[in-house]
Image 1 (cartoon, rainbow, N blue to C red):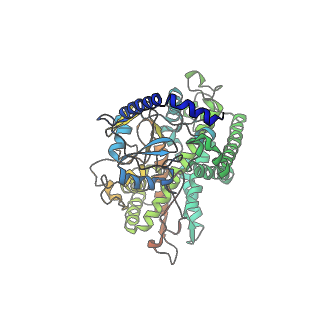
Image 2: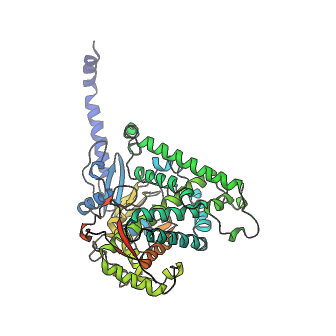
Length: 514
C-alpha cells in the first residue's frame, strides 16, 4: 500500500475530531486577538509575505514613512520581514515615547551593524540598556563630553577654523567645494580631539573612508536582521564584505593609535584631571590597568575602540551635514545671510578671528542652526529603540520587545507643530513662545533625540557648528558660481545613515577685510 493510500484510510477516522479541535483553537485565537479599549489594533498598511513592508520603503526611508503615516496615522505598524516596527511621526506620539514611557522604550534591538562594526554594541548609542550602558554613558558624559572637557578643546576648533579660512582665501575668489572643505575641517577637528593628530597625516583619509562605508552600510537593511535564513542576500549583495572590510580597517587604524599612546604614555601626576589631553589618552587612563580602574569606570580595549568610533561617527555626521545644509539654505535666502552676517560682524568687530565665546551671543545665528536642524536633522530616523516592558502610545498597546522607530524628519516638518513647515524661516525660533533647545525638551524639535538615550554630544556638535558658520560668514561674502541661479540648486537628499545633500555645494567666497 502506498503512503498516500494509507493516509487516505487513516484520516477519516480522525477528521471530525481534528476539525473540532481546529475550530476551538481558531476561535480562541481570534477572541484573544480581538481589539479592546486598552489594546487597539495599530494601523498598518498591507504587507507581502517574507519581506513585509520593506517594498514600500523607497531609497529615502524617512520620506516613505512620512507618506505612509499621512495615510495610516502618526503611530503605525510596519513589518520589516517578520519583525514588527512601530513608527512614530508626530510630536504628541514622540512625547509619550521619550517622556511618558522613556523607561519602557530605552532598549536597543540587536543589529548586525552594532555587532560587527561597533564591537558587539559596546558603544554608547547602540548598547543594550543596563549597567554596562549606564557605565559607558557616565564615562562619556563625565570624562569626554562634559562642559569643561568640551571647552578645553576650544583652541583646536579655533585653529582649524583659521586653517579653513586660509584655504578658502588661497582660492582667490574662485569657486570652492564647500562640502569637501567642511568635511576636512570637521574630520581634522575630530582627529585632534580624539587622537591628538593633526592635518592630512592625522588619520583624515582613513577615517573619512571608514565614515563613508559606515554611512553606506548603515543606511541599508541587512536581510539577516529580519530573516536569518535570508542572510545569503547580504553575502550576494556584497554587504557582508563591506562590513568586514570596514571593521578590519578601523580596528587596525585605532589599534595603531592606541599603541602609539601607550608607548608615549604621559598621563599621571596631580594635574591629571585638569590635563587638556585627547580622548584616547582619557580612555586609556580609564582602562583596566589605568589609574581610575578602582572607581568602577574601567574599560576593556574593545569598549575603548567602540566609544572612539561612536565619538567620531556621531561627531562627524552631526557637524558635517548641519554646516553643509546651513550654508546651502543661507545661499538660497540672501536676506538670512545678510541678517546673520550683520549680527556676526557687529559682535566680532575689528578682531581678526571669531572667538568661540562670541558665538554664544549670536541669537540669530543660533536660530539659523536650529532651523537647519529642524528641516534637515542629521539622523532623519533616530536609532531604533526596543520596548523593555509593555507600554501605550496614544492609546495603542505596545508589547515588550517591540521595535520603536521615531521619524525626526517627519516631526520637524509636521504642519500640526510648525507654521509653513516646509519653509526655511529662522525667525520662528526667535518669535516663538517656546524656548526650543537642542536637547529635545520639546518633542516638536528632536534633532539629537530625547530622553535618557538622547545624544550626549550635543554641546560639542553645536559649538563646533556655530564656530564654523560664524567664521565662514564673518570672513567671506558668499555667492553661487557664475551662471548658476539659486533656483537651480539641487537640494535633494542622499540615501544613507545620515541626511546628506546629494550634490556637492560649490560656492564662491569673496574675502572681506576687517
